[in-house]
Image 1 (cartoon, one colour):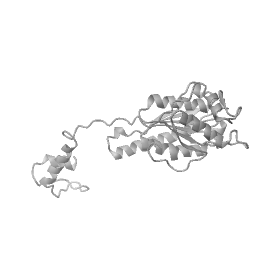
Image 2 (spheres, one colour):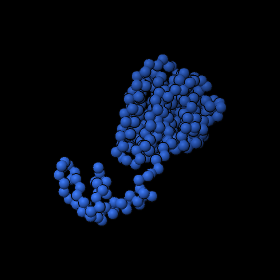
Image 3 (cartoon, one colour):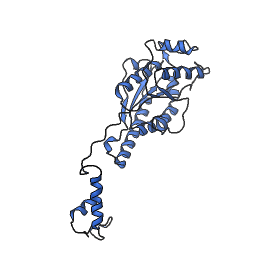
Image 4 (tube, helix red, strand yellow):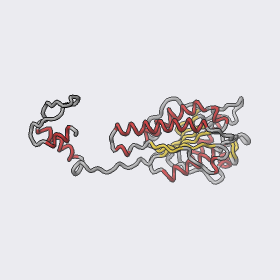
Length: 276
């Protein structure tokens, strides 16, 4: 029985109550004025104070696209770090549902989420201790599943990055009614037709964008996009000039109505601010 419940049980102005930490002993008094103040506090919130509407889910979604090709696996250590230092803080700040999806030369033909983890704390009902437990459990699950994803075998030789971004945009657009984000864990070089940048490196970005997205740009209205690992090439010669690659993806994202929040081979430190 809580101190407040115990207090409301006794009509006496000086009702006895248990002293915390001393089992079987009693002491101290609760003045009648304190009881009245407690009742007033319960009633002040609206109605009787005991019935509250259940908090609405955040409606936020964060799609994480992980490159499992050899170039993607070469950056595995830094990409795991990106999940811990960037993806988790973003998900926590926005109460997002995180969808982790592998991208390679075949996965996007029938996209399957590796795992979906929710950082939404609406079910905690405002209880920060419960909310903290929800976030901690979600963090553990996401990091464990990220490790498991990179540990899976894959014989992929190409990555449909352009197709993956289009697919992620459609998922965020159709499933999110709150904050929306896309994280690309990749060097950002698309190597699957119709967007094979190693075969035809983009030089004129306008032409390259049209070639890579023949059906039109993905709808990225209001979506925050993070390119983590972009231009982290493993070969001696970069397949695409870094500045050209950044301009290409900037044109794609901004042309679709979104915002490029990060574009770098390594992003150190958490991004804590809501919405980017």
